[in-house]
Length: 431
Image (cartoon, rainbow, N blue to C red; front, side, top):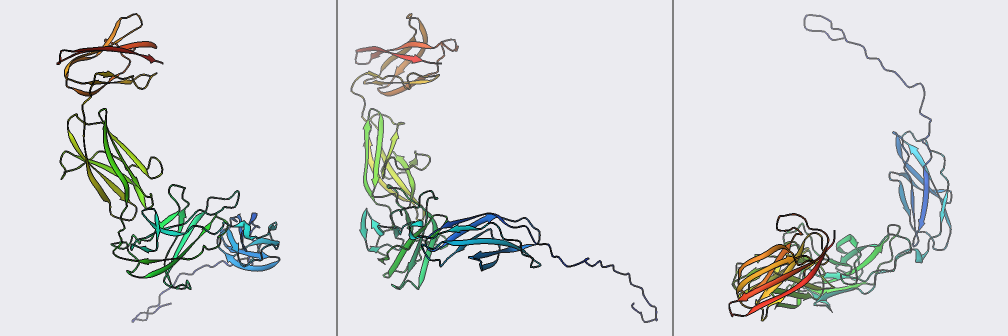
C-alpha cells in the first residue's frame, strides 16, 4: 500500500499466478528420414525437421559418440573422417528444457576420395584467347570443369585470391559460380560491384589463386595454385576477332567474332547514315552468340543505294559497355527482276512473298486458284527499284477466308526500261 502526505492509505489489486503442475519432462519426437551422403573425408547428414514449439535443436552422434549439440538446421556435415572407414550416425532432437528424444534410425556411410568432385583442371588467365600472366586490374580467372560424382547435382565453384604463396592472406573470394560450357567456360572476373570502379586488386602486384567445386554434398580438393601480375596498362575491354557488314539481296548481314564470351552478357547493334552518328539502336534485346563466339545480325530495313554505318556494343557483366566500329556498307540494287518462293510454305494463315525490281515500274501481284480464277490482288501500284515484300493473310478480295489448297501467285512488271517481267509460283495453304 502507498500513503500520501495527509496519511491516506491506498489499496493495491492482487495478482494471481498459476504455477506448473510439474516440470516439463516430455521429450520431442525423434527426427526421421536421416540420410548420410559420403564425400572426401566427410559425410553430409540430412533429416526431416521435428515440429515442436520448444525445440532447441539437434544432437548428432557418430559411432555412438556425440559430435555436435543444439544444431539448429536439419542438416550437418561431419568432417575430418577417415576415407574408407564405415561410419554410423544418429540424430536426436532436444527441447529448451533439455529433454532429448530417442535416437532416430541410424544411417551409415563410407567416405572416399572418389566421392567428391575432382580438382578443377586447366587454370589460367586469358586475353584474346591466349593465356597470359600479366593481366588487367579486372582479370578473368578460368578453370576447366571438374569430374563430377555420378548422380549428384552439377557442381558450383569457389575462387580464392591471395597476396602470398602460402595462401594465408586472403584478398577476395567468391562462391556459387555456376559451371560453364565448352564455349563459355567456368570463370570469374575479379571485381567488387560495391566499389565505384569495381577494382579490388592493386597495380603491379603478384597474386596467387585457386579454385574448387562443391556438388551439394561435399567440397572437392583445391586446384593447383596459379599466379598472375596486375598492370594498370592492360586493357579490360572485350577484344573482337572480326567485324564485317555485307549487303546481300537487300539484307545487310553484320557479323563479328570474339576471342571468348567470358564476362559478356551480349551485344547491341547500332546504325547511322553518317560516320559520326547519331547512331540508333536497331537490335532490341541483347544478342547472344549464335555459335561459340560468333555473332550474326541481319538488318532488313534498308534502302538500295544508301550507305549505312554500323557499330556493335559489348555489354559486359562487370564493365562499362564498349562500342566497336563503325563499319560501312552500301546496299546494292538488284541486277534483275526476281520473284521468290513464299515463306513459310505450306502456310496458315499468313505467308510472305518477296520480289526484286531491277528498275522502277508498274507492278501487279495477284493470287489465283487452281481454276485460274483471281482470288486477291496483293499489289497494284508503281514501285521503285529495290527489294519488296508483301504478305497474304489467306483472305480473298471480299476479306473472306479461302479454303485449303494450292494457289498461284503471279507478278507482272512493266519496267521504266520498257521491259516486261512476268512469272508465277505456286503455294500451299493448309488449315
